[in-house]
Image (cartoon, rainbow, N blue to C red; front, side, top):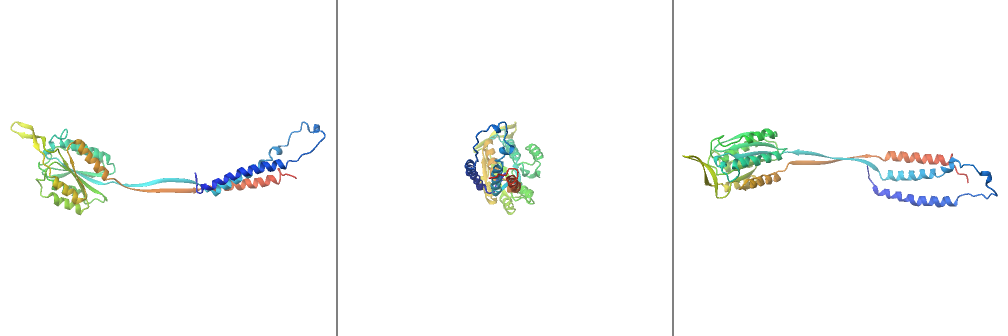
Length: 327
């Protein structure tokens, strides 16, 4: 319970001078008789009304206090928040070409990318998330879904060799845009991760970026791989051998894709750096939340007013009948 006008409660302090006035007035109006002897009154007990003679004044004090409470307007307040949250539609476009087996990220780029992507998916509980993989071609590994358990299972199944080798960045981005173009969400995002340059597919990366821009889709591009050389498994006449291969990421094109669509380009040189990239994207792409504060007030003054009225009537009745004072 709270009061609409709590400042009126200070009026309760007026009860103090009222009590002082009553005590002083009572001391001055006490009647006295002079008797030669009081033996005749021995053994007589005071009437019950003697003990009740201050009761009307007590009723008056309580009545005044109740009137002050009524003026202060007591209210019962119920308050709560109504929230509406809308998730973001996100497509993760993941490069699964042979260079993603390089081991500058542990255990290799592909496994590190899958692990960090899984953590990102787990944290985005309200989002529709889809998964596109690309190498020399691209396809949708998982359409947009809020069933993240299924999505994580499909992410875990991704491995090198599922599709023809190569790096078709434009085709991977175009497939992602195709998954998002019919979305009704106000926020649509592609997170495209690659470690190379576009060398396959029939769609140029910037053409796919222009397509994404026309649909209002933001693209965050991530170049993964250390600078310089990276240990990479290579087929040789003696089987697969680890060789240091140059890391060649087309950062210029990836930066242009992000700039064209209102996104941002990131470079991740190790697993912690990749995790930080996803954390930054997670901070930038917050849920759309509408919060409405609802407050309901219920007036409570009526019981106090009725009680005050009842006590005033009781005081008047007692003063003029059972507890009437005769001068």
